[in-house]
Length: 493
Ligand code: UDP
Image 1 (cartoon, rainbow, N blue to C red):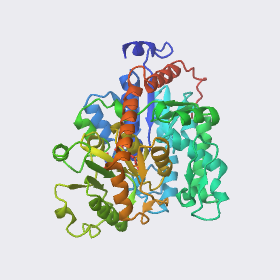
Image 2: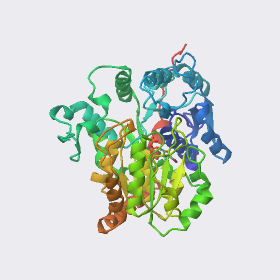
Image 3: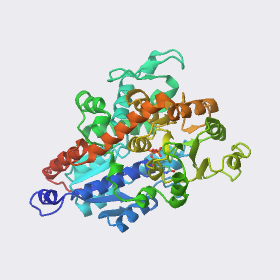
Image 4: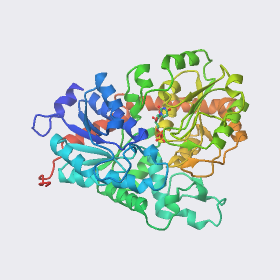
């Protein structure tokens, strides 16, 4: 980093390059942003994260373990917001009426964020896609804004082409398949897998926000992507050459964590299970013999779907760790669990209720497959662990990521969910769970997927090593930022 530190002296000001990072209030966005800050740090770049009180804990933890990352706090919900005071993160959007209020609250962050930017006087702002006004804020301060979507380039391309061409309009039924045009692969979807906000014709607060998000990406300096070139090269090229976006693949960001199990165990939140207990359980198992099942920080499953999952896992005969997110309103009565399930499967199946140390589990040699909702962080963590996956997308851009895993990389099989739903209430039966789990765990095809998955794991490692594509991509970005000449600053008042 030494050479970099010298080369990054900013425009003769004798200061280090300073990047401010602004994620939104969701674990799937906050976790990679903290990794990104660590990564920039390790290359001699000063970083500050703007966060809210409820998401500042992991940043403080990182500071305690020696990472030189600044933290500026903004209140959320901000002054003037109509969000109830107890709504502090995106995963609490349990009813549709909260969404416009959340959108409004995000916009109200502009003033406090600009105040911080004025105080910190950074060289660059990297901010979440959900904060389109940050392009204007960065402009005011004469600094570039980079957008962080938190997903794959593959999903960005697929969702843009879906939006542009609306291929779902050409089918006459929900079961008739269609292909998203103009992409490097033939990706086949059906209408119920398309996000409802894409299908809907009338304008509402969310569709307006999405339009602003698109325009702000166009006006921004570029896009940073938590992925690596070799994983999705066709789409990285498509994004740059066909869609005309400037982007840098700088991931997998999670690989910047050089710490041991403790650092891995503490990603995002305090685990609901003692990490030593969890490791001891995994240590007692044979290599590649355990299926890890987790659906991220936001997706919620109905009791019916939880029940089908339980029955399917038991019927698969495989050992498993299953993370069950307890919703705020869940009572302790888990009558969705088949009678005697936990007693019967003692030693064979471990249920973690709440937050699991996911990366630590996935990295354990006993884990042989991952049943995932295809949130991008989880997908990438599965790739970095080199395990085949059962894909069970629920909402957001997860149906796109599923196609990357199953059709392009061919390191997973789909459980067959056919419906985009904010909360998974129905649609996947236990036989499908059993069959999909068996297909990634047992037999020749499973071994082929495993060996392909292992080769992507190796590629991921190489990408972030000195000379690798993400390493060089980050160098190129840092170089560009350090010679960026800001236009004359305007008075922001
Ligand atoms: N995660 C975790 N433990 C859990 C659930 C999630 O560590 O019990 C982490 C997971 O490793 C990932 C993030 O939370 O880094 C979830 O992000 P993702 O994009 O996969 O899904 P989202 O939660 O945004 O739907």
